[in-house]
Image (cartoon, rainbow, N blue to C red):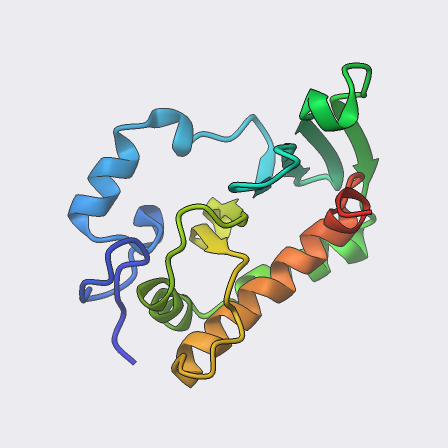
Length: 182
């Protein structure tokens, strides 16, 4: 399967690690926003949840550090959660869980995931984002219509791998999607 850009779907000669599986034009647009390519010191993965058009607009970023530390920054939506919520939570992973996380992230097939990105785009749906320079990931996936029967099998395989990674990241997080949707 030939590589394609995760952003626009054009064909690529190869996946260049430092370009996050993007063509020159898409990477240039990403690079125009330096904050999109920067992580705090010693952070190896950032997992983010964005609610889309929803009743509860709470969103969060979870930072996973190389030593197993986790820091989660939550932007609570006051009409639903009030104003007196803790906006920063922490946790820690042991070495085995850090290794498990790296293994799952490394298993994501970028070519299959790019086929999903070519297939699906919903602007107002909730989405999750994983940014991990070590694993060449800087990808958002909509949480809508993932069980489409018409979706090519390669695209389904890519999004399933991404979902496994997201579910693992979420399960290690102090505030999870399950807690959010209670």
